[in-house]
Amino acid sequence: MNPQDLERARNVWTYRGQQRPPFAVNPAEGQESVWDYPRPPAYVPDPRRVEVSAGEQRIAHTERAIRVLETGSPPAFYLPPEAVDQTRLRPSARRTFCEWKGEAEYFDVEGSAGWISNALWRYPQPEGEASAIAGWFAAYPSLLRCVVSGETVRAQAGGFYGGWITDELVGPFKGEPGTGHW
Image 1 (spheres, rainbow, N blue to C red):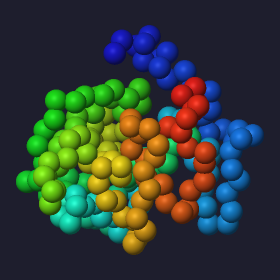
Image 2: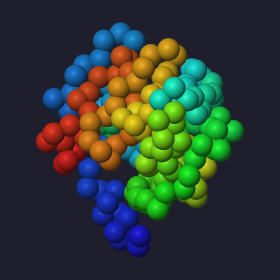
Image 3: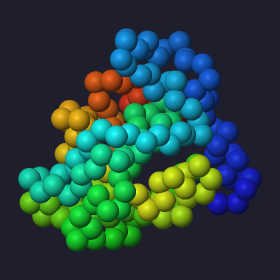
Image 4: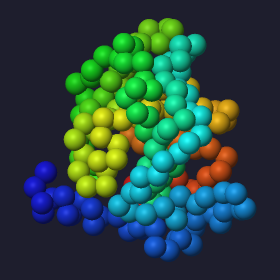
């Protein structure tokens, strides 16, 4: 992406985490508002136990994840490569581009019921602060069972986003109907 298009993509967002919008839910004690997350995103180490399964088959687990916190979205959890059973992965032809992280590559995952298309992704060569997740894997909770400290994650709405919704988060969340301009 050329520098002008990249800057245009970065400037399209109305909300950037400096001030919670009036429609945002106020968090209770022990909760986080996704509207307090910054844009560009923050990359925050998370020591909680994270597990990812495809059907009955566990494909990843770690206590060394990184949460990517971006305005309006539930965090995506990234797991180090050694935490993922890569023998159960098959590269996919799918590619997407994030204005903050660069080009993502996708992987199909072999589970107990067969192959699940485009269930994991990673950024092989992100730049800037996103280099913290270079080569680390993220999972779609809409396709895989994702668990954080024993709590089963709920998937973010919309087919594009891979945020992990847990009880500690309040929204509303990007991806729900009518949120495309956020």
